[in-house]
Image (cartoon, rainbow, N blue to C red; front, side, top):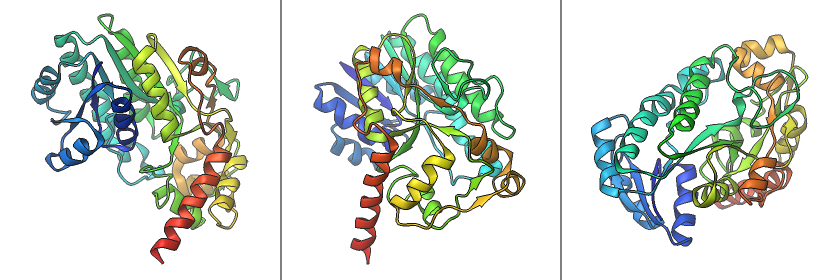
Length: 321
């Protein structure tokens, strides 16, 4: 198939493009940067330069590639600031609203048969069971300070699933870790854990779901090739509370155990958004993706992945010494 990947040079794109090429697909990689064309060629893709926020450029790019499948992986996340979460995600929110609209319009014009888009597990409503399925309420009660971000995620999902002219597929990824992510060797979150700047807030009862970036790419290939229209949680097998996974991550990185702070102090350090994510977040079940995409994560649990991450971080640190 001919596949256009929008956001092809991001962490996901760098994993996804080579997998699609190896599977025999003709891949066109969209980037807004002229300087990244060589990277895309190295990954095996045909470079397509376009600003996703410019509808005319997107229309030309999609018309030129004339894909059978469009994959929407557009993000632009700045330095993480939990106290001002929506501000940190402002550009990504535009890509998830305006960028989604531009891609859908261009895809419809050329008759794209399948449209696959990135979403995120953390939008599940924070009531009821600790682990959610795709049928549970999503994004109706976002935490304070996260309204714009969750609203943008909802826009992606609602727009893609409402596109009756194509097969719309939404992938609710878990928290990424691995190469080129903020929870990779040398990444922003990794360094925060190593420096004990990532505390357990309150009881640490928020449930997180993770996914190694390579496993997320494998699931995305499966969705592109044979996914049915709808939503899939792309997460590993073990949703876990912050109080469970954060000390394991610190130990894997050779760091001291994370500090523990009361919820009130957490609000001062991480704002209401960060505190809610630490104490109230709901995780996600991957049962549907396993069953319907015929996909199994290689890193079945973040425990395996974090050990691997720790070994990579130590190797890179030793090489730099």
